[in-house]
Length: 365
Ligand code: KG4
Ligand code: ZN
Image (tube, rainbow, N blue to C red; front, top):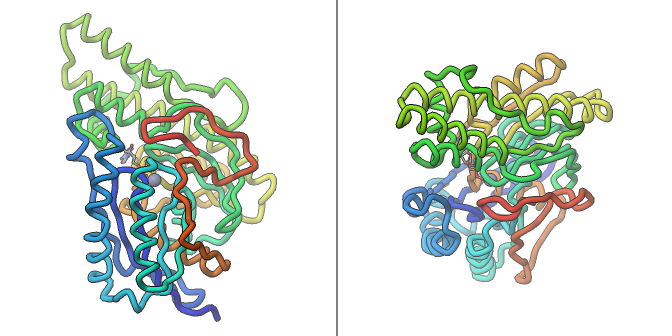
């Protein structure tokens, strides 16, 4: 039986500073002993988006507090740890550097091994942290900076089937919220507003559905929303509550329809190779959206595929996923030294063609 591992994880690649302690006894399901997240929403709210320099400074200030709290809440000390795992990319480089430097300092002071984790691998392995999903499975990663279909075959073995050619869906939700005067992060605000809306009143485009394959696009949808909003404002002199709810509902339905149809296509490709393990997992902040999750569940039911979505707190950025990925990498023999580099770009599937676009949260991997 594999030995018990206790790993501290650090995450600072975007606008959340996070630390967590995760333990796995042998082959048992891993246990999250603590997971601390300091968000930066208030810090960036006046700027309409994340300011990388402010984010990096805030990470540098908050990381030690996060580590201290994560260790205290887990009731462990540095001596109880087996390694330190840290997000080493992809992401906003200043933030990634803050985390990597903090982890290097802790590793140098304690002699603990250092493990650099790909942020996307953290999201991609979350179904194994929460539900011990066996390999392989198809993953739809949908967040503020990323959108891709991946076959997850191992902790370091991913095949990308497709992804966004421009914006990520979370980015489109955030932009929609800004255009309609709703607070950030936009996803939860747009979802709440959409609840009372009529999704059929405005017919937004379903980008790239007319083309084969699993690539996606969301920038046209954003523009369509802007045009529709401007038309309503010029016709009636402003937006009523009803209009806002209908715009949110129509937008959300368009995103859900596109993700559902592209998931259907990705699942067909996946099932052709892996008929014995029919499973779709979803991860990333947008996975928290109930309408989108329902649309994906419907596709899975139609194709006889199991569907899994992590609980809310593990959909959005957190360090438990980084610590857990660190456990898998540690068991696979990965150790990084003081030369560990922070990487703004770090595709999971090195063999896949580079993605286009470089959204609000940095270049897409
Ligand atoms: O995974 P995450 O925390 O950070 C990135 O790696 O990007 O995802 C954050 C994104 C934001 O764009 C946020 O608006 C979106 O996830 N999000 C949602 C919902 N909750 C968060 N989008 C749609 N519906 C939601 N309920
Ligand atoms: Zn993320």
